Image (tube, rainbow, N blue to C red; front, side):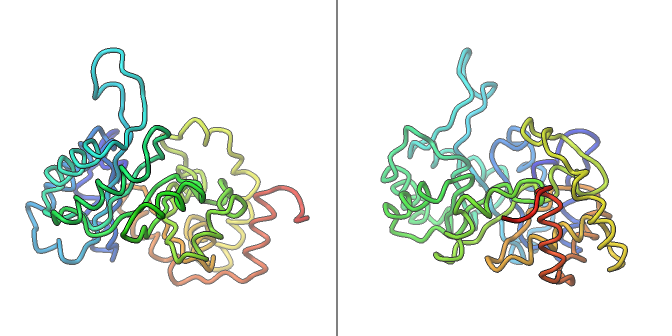
Length: 285
C-alpha cells in the first residue's frame, strides 16, 4: 500500500480493485505517505466494515522520518517499546480497525535490545491490538536473535526479492524461511515496475538494476504462455519452495487484476533457471 497516495493515485479504487480480484493481504507501514496511505485504507474500512473479516491487515513501524520529528532530527530507526506501542496505536486509528493482524519491525534498530522489542510485542498482544508479529529487512541472525527473546513466534520476514534483487537466494534469508517455516513477503517483486510496463518511484538502489538482461526472456516465456511479462516475473517468485508472497505495489486496477494470473502459472525448472541465469548474466558456477 506504499503507493495509495501520491502522483495521480486513486488509493480507494486500488484497494477495492484488489479486493474484487481476490487479494486478501494488505501491507502497510506507518511511513507510507507519512501515514496517509493507512488513512486511505481506513476510509475504505469505515465505509465498508463488512470487509474486515475477509482481510489480513499488516503494518510496520520503526522508521522515523526527519519531517515527522523536531528540527535537526536525522532519518533513523527506533524500536524502543514506547515508540512501537505508540506507532501501533496511531496505525490502528488511521486504519480504522481494532486489531492489526500482522505487525512488523520495519528495519532493525541497532540500538534496541531484543528483549525491549519483545516486551512491546507482548503488551500489544495482551491488549488485543496485534494478533501476530514479524520483521522486515532483517538478516537471518537478527531475526534469530529477536526470536530468542520473543515468547511468541515471528511469522514473517519481508525483504526485497525479485529477478532484479536475488540476494535472499544467497544470504541465508530463504534458507532460514524454509528451516523455520517463516514466510518471506517479497517487497518490490517487479523491481519497481522494471519487470512490468515501466519503472515508478525507484529507490536509489533500484536505479542500478539491469532489467534488459532478463526482460527479453520474460517476454519470450510470456508469449509462449499467453500471459503478461509481469505475471511470469511473479510466477518466478512463487515457484520457490519457501512459499514466497509477492507484495504487489501497483495502484493500476488492470495490473492488479493481471497479477492474479501468476497463481495459475508453474514455471518448469528449465524456465526458472533460465531466468535466473539471464538475470545474473553469467553461467551458474
